[in-house]
Image (cartoon, rainbow, N blue to C red; front, side, top):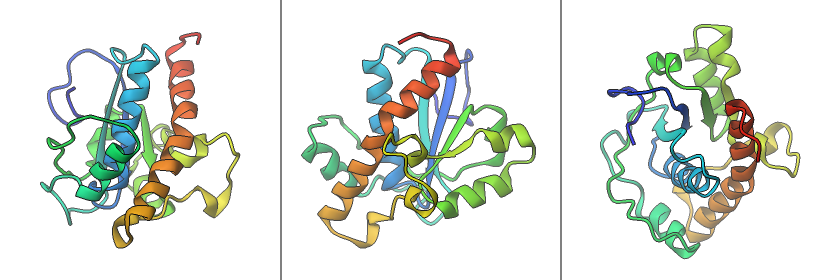
Length: 177
């Protein structure tokens, strides 16, 4: 898959997931969404990637605890190729949906977005959770400071929103389920 900001061929629907350093929450969501779009038969129409709002981790692999959480939850992918990168505001011209992990990321992204159309494409990941979360409940806490249970909670919070994100994108593509 060609990440945003690099030689983008064709015109797939593009989703970019954003967290702070792009080593915990956003790569986990990227991998879960890629898998879900494949399973939904949309893998050839949707490109998912991820980025961070800071350069703190730029070039680093995903946190090993993120990969361990994926494996604990039955995902056998090879996630070793991930390298953290920073969201570039020029990507708004290429990305259809930008998913923020918490309110801080949402605020940064909205500030970077120059026009209303770009701002309208920014959503919180958990806004797609059918449990109907609202307000501060939409934030996915950063598991970096925690232990395996924090990474498992992050996994569960992202997983709860995945089907809603897939259905949203399906609707944007005009595909019936």
